[in-house]
Image (cartoon, rainbow, N blue to C red):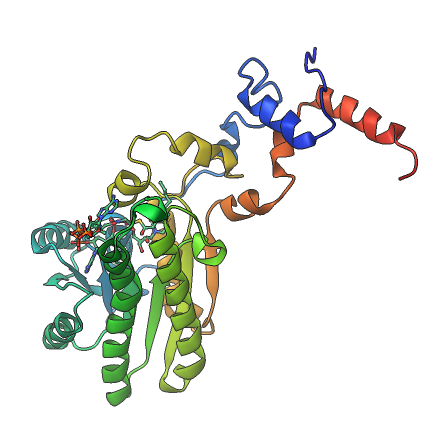
Length: 330
Ligand SMILES: CCCCC/C=C\C=C\C(=O)SCCNC(=O)CCNC(=O)[C@H](O)C(C)(C)COP(=O)(O)OP(=O)(O)OC[C@H]1O[C@@H](n2cnc3c(N)ncnc32)[C@H](O)[C@@H]1OP(=O)(O)O
Ligand SMILES: NC(=O)C1=CN([C@@H]2O[C@H](COP(=O)(O)OP(=O)(O)OC[C@H]3O[C@@H](n4cnc5c(N)ncnc54)[C@H](OP(=O)(O)O)[C@@H]3O)[C@@H](O)[C@H]2O)C=CC1
C-alpha cells in the first residue's frame, strides 16, 4: 500500500520525494530499465551491400568512437574511406583493422582541424590518394565538463577551435575545391542534442555545436546549386571512451541518463553509423538542411515540465486524482 503522506500540494516536491525513496522506487515497474527490452539495438549494416561502391568518404575523428563506427559501416558498404585526426598511430591502427575486415582500403591522414594550413595540406593529400571525397563527415570534437567560471580563455578557444573552426575549415576547404571541380558531395556534421537547448557545464561545446548547426543549415541553402547536401545528426549519449571519460569521469551520471531516456538505454555506435550511412547515401539525395535528433527520446524527456510524474505510482495517482476532482472552482 502507498505510505506517502501528502505534505504539500506541490507535485514537484512529491515527485522528488518519490525519486529518492528506494523502497517505493520501481514499484510501478515503469522505470526498471526493462523497457529497453522493447528497443533492442540492431548492429548489422542497414543499407544494401555495395551502396557506397566507387565512393570516397572522409571522416574526421574517424580513428575512435563514433567516427570509427561510421568508417567501419561505410567501408563495409563499399566506400574507400579516409580518416583524419591528430594521432596518426591511432588512425593507422583503426585503418588497418577496418580494411582487413571489409577488404576496402582505409587511408589514415594526420590533421589538426584547428589549423587551416594543416587542413589544406590534408586535402592535398586526400586529392592525391583518392581524389576529392563524395562524402564528408565532420565528426571530430573536443569537450569536457567544467563550471564556466573555471574556464580559461585557452580552454574556451581549444574547444571552439576544434568544433566550430575545425568544421568550418574542413567544410570550406573541401567545398571550394569541389565547386571548382564541379563535383557534388554530401556533408554531415555530428553535433549534440544540447546544441539546440544549450547546456551548463559544457558551454564552449554547446556554443560551438550551435555554430556548426548554423553553418550547415546556411550552406544547405547556399550550396545546393553546386550539388552539395548538408545535414546534421544530434546524438544522445552513446558510450565512447572519448566522451564518457571527459563528461562522466566517475560514472555517476550514467544511471541518471538512462533513467530519463524513454527507450531505457544508451545508443550504440553501430546505430548512429547506420543513420550516418543513410544520410550520406544516395537514398537520402532529397535530404538537405535536416537536423536529425537521435537520442532515444532524451531531449523531450528533459524538456517536458511534467515528465517527472513518471515516478508517481498507480496508488498515488488515485490520491492525486481524488484531490484534483475535489477542487471546485478557481
Ligand atoms: C556522458 C555524456 C554523454 C553525452 C555526450 C554529449 C555530447 C558530447 C560531445 C562531445 O564532443 S564528446 C567528445 C569528447 N572527445 C574529446 O574531447 C576528444 C578530444 N579531446 C582532447 O584532446 C582534450 O580533451 C582537449 C582538452 C579537448 C584538447 O586537448 P589539447 O589540445 O591537448 O588541450 P590541452 O590539454 O592543452 O588544454 C587546452 C586548454 O584547456 C584546458 N582544459 C583542459 N581540460 C580541462 C578540464 N577538464 N577542465 C578545465 N580546463 C581544461 C587546459 O588547461 C588548457 O587551458 P590553459 O589555460 O591551461 O592553457
Ligand atoms: N559519444 C556521445 O555520447 C556523443 C558524441 N557526440 C559527438 O560525436 C562525435 C564523436 O565523439 P566520440 O566518438 O564520442 O568521441 P571521441 O573522443 O572518440 O572522438 C573525437 C575525435 O575527434 C578527434 N579530434 C579531437 N581533436 C581534434 C583535432 N584538433 N583535429 C582533428 N581531430 C580531432 C579525436 O582524434 P585525435 O585525438 O586523434 O585528434 C577523436 O577521434 C563528436 O562530434 C561528439 O561531439 C555528440 C553527442 C553524444
